Image (cartoon, rainbow, N blue to C red; front, side, top):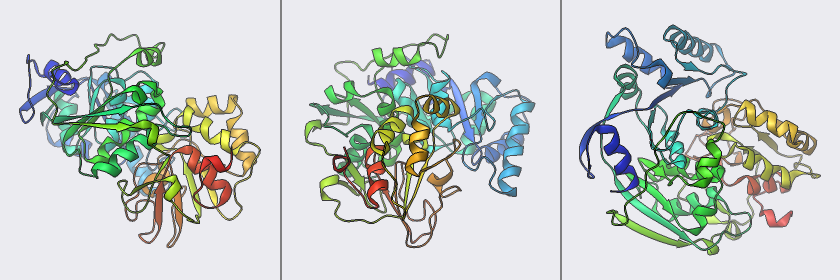
Length: 417
């Protein structure tokens, strides 16, 4: 079996599962946020059950419109806050929280070999830890909160192998954009993407989180790495819970095996209006921009901020644009302060925000006007994703984003450093 199949088999009480098979799976953690939790709560209340299956295995994080941007978002936040407190769920309030897909691994809430489901499409982020993690609709999450189980079809698995070493300024964001550019936004539809190779082994955990996070942008059900020493080192001090590491069998059956030479891959930029519209930085041309966003559940971790600070230190953001930087969690914010990164950003002329998804979904703190163009380290660049339907979003890694903030156009980090 593949890695995904082994985890699912262990969670449905079977010795073996096969792609296409329908199974009932026990979940280790259930997640929702301030957009998706209200629907899940309403459906949960309609089920007629008094309690959730296990309050320690359900988490709610208000991160999309929080700190509350208006009365409606305040009412939503109050609704999930009241529900979380009533059922004694795991809950993170503003000031203690962060972006959901950053803080759950950070706090040791998701572990290798587990099944995690969330009412958010980027729940697949936790596959970086060797877990099977996937997004589901709010009604499925309501049932999961009540029963601790989900019903699903076993996905096929595609094996992606990156041979060779990474170039300078190339990281997880570039590898996943490169994949999506090659196979398209439906190239891994309802499949588990399993990542292998020398370049993958060299990736930090932050880089792996970025790749798993964007598996959904290729239509995937999950994006999974095998747990290794880096995984175990990351988890030290974060959890006391025991976990099981699974590995794919040498004779596992994959629907496809796709190989790439990582040494040929440049930093990637996804042009509007799909993540699959990826181009190497050398082919971008002259694209003048109005805004840069560095952060999100894709690239708001310490490694991302360090990369941006490395570019911005001692330099200035172009006066014609806005550069908005969002640490992924309070802990990352504090660590960035201690390292002097926040000072670097502010002296460069960037605005630094409390952790929030805000601009990624066109919610607040970075909404685009008609005709504006933004380079963003977020995960989607659909029409109207970050504001007006006539605005444009270009996806890139933090180094490209920071360099672009300096030049006022999409720029190669090599132009700076």
